[in-house]
Image (cartoon, rainbow, N blue to C red):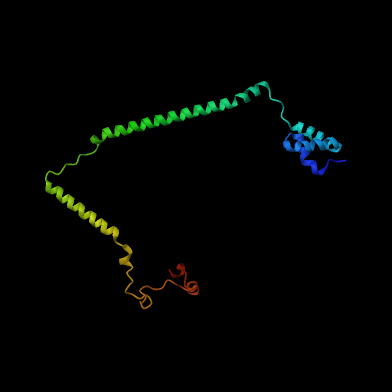
Length: 181
């Protein structure tokens, strides 16, 4: 006689020790009354026992106990190294910035300052003209002059350029480039 089909999954979980606590009383009660299911559970436990890992050695147990501490310790060491690297990089960048600020006046060529006030007025007026021209250019619509078609009716306009639409028969019947040369 084989094990009960409706209990197969529960028996497997019982043998593996993974049965939900609220189902254990029902399965225990069934095992007390069904010999076939008891034999099935015993066979399953024997099979699962073959796949079970051996008990860890004392050295393996010690390593497993200290694994979280070792992992956290290495993570902290890595974080300290990264912080030191960032700190060193920041210090070097700050030193480079200070060095550039100190050397800047000696590196850049000095421009002579205008000696007369009239030269500065001329420069200011040319700058104002440049700004005004730039503003006018920015406000201009570049396509409005090129595509001013408000006075032209497109249907009445004569074709200025030949049509690029070519029928397939005309294209295929034309001589190839190699023959025309």
